[in-house]
Image (cartoon, rainbow, N blue to C red; front, side, top):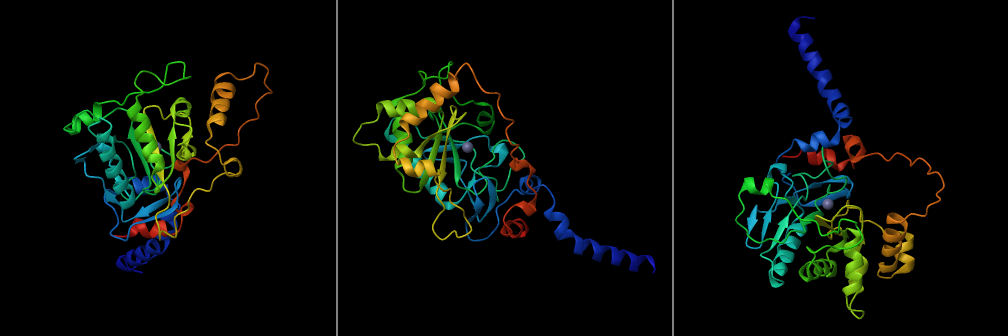
Length: 298
Ligand SMILES: [Zn+2]
């Protein structure tokens, strides 16, 4: 074979091998280097912590009632329903005295696992919102990189601190009451405080407020799968959540204050926890097949 023929043969081999080789590459690297969404119908594909998204739209960097923070990360992309939700909640924030909302990460332009940070936020339906009330909406790009949020948790982690206000309560309640929202993750002291101060007669929404580690500088809103997104996997409630059907207030106190902050003195030696695979380990082949199409789409 002459050189040209050999090169042609090599190119053919590479072409045939490419899809399989691509599928074995790290999904977070592949999705992390794409800076624009796919021009497809908007669709969340897979689950919050293992998936991707087609046709995402960008939350405008600044709007009448919000600013997107940390623009250098390019994670202000969401399903149109997530963007609409942010606009609505930020409008509501102005009714309780804030200028609006400072919005943290949503998703990358095509969703997918990330090279840093979150395990979830992969399908355009998870939204981080800062606990720091927006006081002005003319922050420069540089200021939005350097400004920090505020924590609403006390140093001993038992309660909220002086940064927590009634406005926070109203905004979180509003988010939980929204029919598009599946759950809202907050630091346990926030849930404990909201349980104390919410009216007895008006707390159907309380079970959507979910206590979790961290989440004292921001709260995290997770939307349900939008209608018609058939490849989107909505998180199923756990059996205990279904059987209790309550507001989760007693459980939160028990878990956080009794079990976590004051564990019993005599403990059985802990079993080594099974090592969970991190989203950062996923290859493209681990994600739903449709994600290969999303990655390749224009
Ligand atoms: Zn989050």
